[in-house]
Image 1 (cartoon, rainbow, N blue to C red):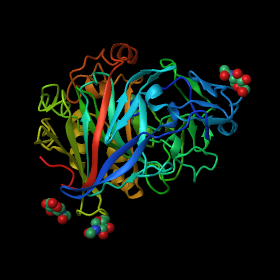
Image 2: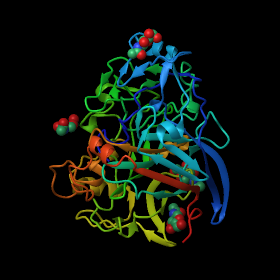
Image 3: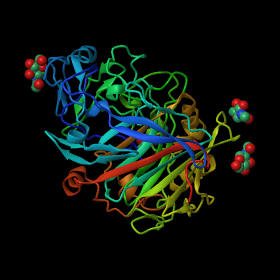
Image 4: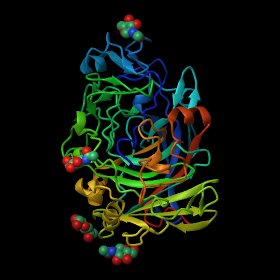
Length: 462
Ligand SMILES: *[C@@H]1O[C@H](CO)[C@@H](O)[C@H](O)[C@H]1NC(C)=O
Ligand SMILES: *[C@@H]1O[C@H](CO)[C@@H](O)[C@H](O)[C@H]1NC(C)=O
Ligand SMILES: *[C@@H]1O[C@H](CO)[C@@H](O)[C@H](O)[C@H]1NC(C)=O
Ligand SMILES: *[C@@H]1O[C@H](CO)[C@@H](O)[C@H](O)[C@H]1NC(C)=O
């Protein structure tokens, strides 16, 4: 997981959003069931839905069909500044399938990469709603718990990323804290992550108009002065990537932050290229089997065979085996064809062989790979765990990477680097150019299904 690439999907529809709620298209969340387990084979079904992030939505002047944002620029008439723009512009309902390629069926969610509706849409990001709710995200405390899902990455080539992760967000999308936000979780507002993305168009109830600079590589994106890394009061802003993957490589990566009050960042404090200057640990402590010396563990025809669906189990172990304990390890295992597959053991000089993320692993890995240990400086595993006490929101996405071409996940990164930690997968260093990926693999998709949450050991069986 690498600097400023991480969750920034720079790929948006050519029109975007406001902080009022629009009514030109009715907002109907695709339903998705998941399960809460108490012990093995004892799970109850939860009837939830998913909501599309607000950044992908059409934003138009309230009560009209006039765009507030077109391509990668704001309409200067209605968006003179952040406050007036938020007041003048409405975020509209989404045609999930037709415009964004998002469909659900029972417990399965399919996210398609390129969708040619009235306009061309690239990728998407959705959040899980609380059961039965249209206005609140589901929040999770995974301490001393286990999170499990099935995934099909067989149609996800080099340069793409089907991701499932937790982000610290207000359950109501920020409506209570920022009263000028009238759209809320129903319209997917309030995203933040440890990359402090500056491409978010509305932040804390205001439009990110000041200093907005259109992207040079992406016709649908840009960045403003303000970045989104706010957090719940008195707790660090955290991002916990359970799953970032395509058919070639995968990584799971916690990212702590040091921001301790409810705030958005500005300018370079959002995402300094040298991540020690930022408030968040953009690199994170990643576990990627290939990068850690086991090149035949994950991929087409490998031990975890990405040609077909498999189950991903992630366990959040605490210091005293209690939900109030300190997060001390994140463990991973897989189930495929009725067989439990333990995570690969590291095989890197200077790293004591392990198949989990814990503090010792993170410290040794940073040293072995010559990476600066911002993970530890920004709060480490314990810092990440503390975010769960506040509750974290589940995010699912598919994206390509305008910043680093996904090379940090599936290829050699930086491309000229050699030595330990450089190679993360078998994709060519030329493989992840977003334009190429969009042209060559428009039908790429990821399917997430069968999400289960419960005490450790309760959510899977062989
Ligand atoms: C910008 O907004 C004004 C006022 O609503 C409208 O007349 C104009 O057509 C808009 N411009 C674009 C490019 O949509
Ligand atoms: C990163 O920041 C550190 C500490 O401020 C500094 O010593 C180092 O030179 C910087 N590295 C780069 C590549 O800017
Ligand atoms: C937590 O549980 C594991 C096994 O489930 C046990 O090995 C370990 O000693 C326990 N830790 C504490 C601090 O109780
Ligand atoms: C677990 O550890 C936390 C933090 O040290 C402590 O507050 C809590 O009381 C402990 N819980 C149990 C059941 O031991």
